[in-house]
Length: 98
Image 1: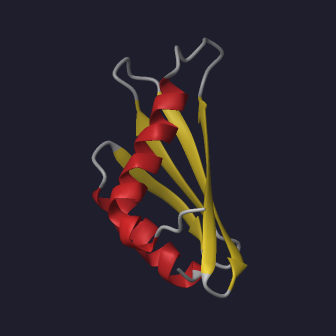
Image 2: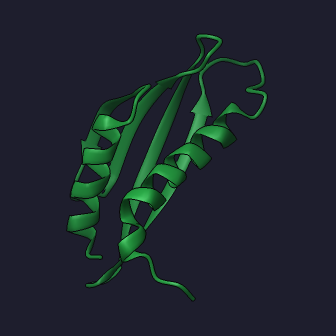
């Protein structure tokens, strides 16, 4: 799907996804920043970057980092999988198989 439509679908999903708080969005750059609290009360900053590959194809990169110096015990990995899983369910009809 085009980047503009992907942007709208992603923003809508993130606003409805429980546990996530939309902090920042820059549409012309394709960057969305959300915050998530873990079960142990730690805060994760999650950055989604949307790329337009061509007029009809787009991609999303997800990066998650915990605040603080202690390890995250894999919570950033699980957060990334959670977001990709939610996006996959919502956008499955538009997905291209290789």
